[in-house]
Image 1 (cartoon, rainbow, N blue to C red):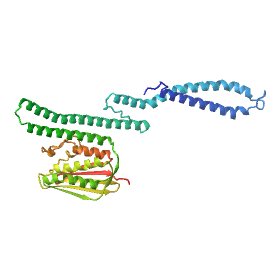
Image 2 (tube, rainbow, N blue to C red):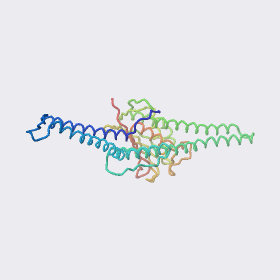
Image 3 (cartoon, rainbow, N blue to C red):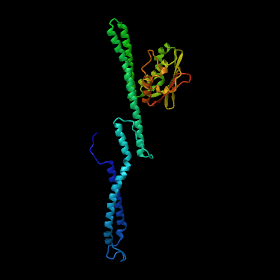
Image 4 (cartoon, helix red, strand yellow):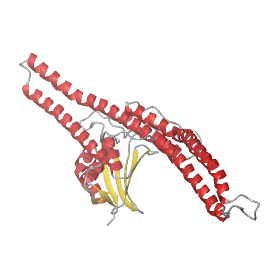
Length: 360
């Protein structure tokens, strides 16, 4: 918002320094007057008839005192201007960096040198903020590009199917409608996943006490036919684990983890284990599955949106949209928890979610 122009911080500090010196000088002169001159006799003979009287001392002292006051004032203005400039130099660098960041250049860093002080702390905090902001903007740009690519695919397929049907009127319309419905369903699933991911990132939800063990049982019951179809054994173990958050988002988190564990498993005779427990001030949800051996360098990238590791790509109807673990990561982060992914030595993945325990 626009503000009226005023004195600069440097000028204010300069006037403060000069004013302080002037007040200190005036106090010193007052002390001299009170404790020295007032005890000098004010008569024509002075003290014991040999020293000057008060009148002569005042006549001699006053011009020197006035000259000293003028010197202190000038010295305070000049010295204060120089000192204020040196003191505010780091703030000027921070201001320049903020203006540079305001133009969209987030790669600039202050990197202030010297010992730790208030300006150094402000500079380091500003650099850390720029680093996080640059990372967040890059992530959002990458996410937008990937989302555009993913959404363009079903639209392009739909256009191709319609072009083929228009050029070949004898083509089976039932097959066309079925394929268009499948493509449209995938586009809707992707859009809903994007909206859910955005909601989790904002953290705009009502918090309540939720038992993760009940959510695990509900997700396992929902996905049990899917697991049995793939000959995957699905088991839920552990006890109550109460966490504070959105029951809807947490259920989606558990469902995504269990579905991922079923999809990315052995072709047959695999296992998925969902375990919940309360551990101190945290509620823990752990999902483990069998499967192929995962390269350690692949695991940290699995929570990135639209990231599909080569060893985990599925081409069937449950291939997903590449947002399963990204949504899980977003929900966990929005609830103030931590997400840990680690490959199992015998193959498969172990996912551990730690959420703050609910306060009753």
